[in-house]
Image (tube, rainbow, N blue to C red; front, side, top):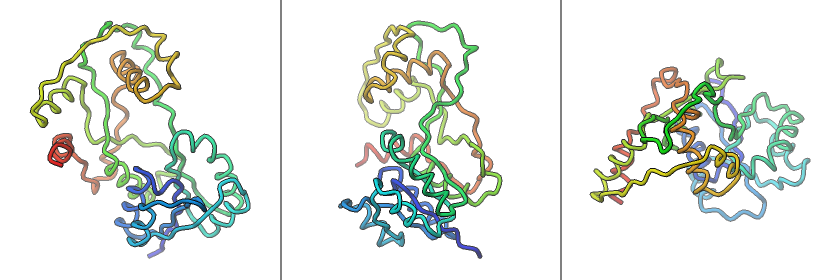
Length: 244
């Protein structure tokens, strides 16, 4: 069996470490993680013990990046938004020079908006569905899909579940035993533009507004393409959270 050499940028992060573990569990991959030369991260130690190689690299030195990517078949970027914006252009140039055949980018662009949804209630009812995915499920989908020749130059949509804000609220109440107070807020459509680069609270607020306008919602779902991936149910996730 041909072993695929995968290098992961951002592999010590919350999602990145899950992707590395999923690749190792899938088998057929030789997995290495790019690590900043001055990084001290417990995740790196754990991943190393689980079988991942650790490659120290200075992201500001182009020659360092080319050296680190020599022999890699695939570069997987699981970088945060800010890091991806700053580091990916140089990473991709270095990957090309090093002969890497394929890159999987960190992409933070939302799905194409359903602009035909021109009318909406303000405030909305919280009954519009959206796709949600557990980090472990996404990591497993990535690990499986990299072996699929049809995944090259393609984009797929995966989800653990499709749910509305009302259903999510009810599920949290059921597992926590706490009654939540729900407030429906009026939102001006210009809010999304004004706070498009704001902090996480505003980002969540904007996402909720877009879901209710049906600009964002359930994506094209390709779960059936990889039936070996068993997704995590919302109930299982919440049970784990509230039992800790």
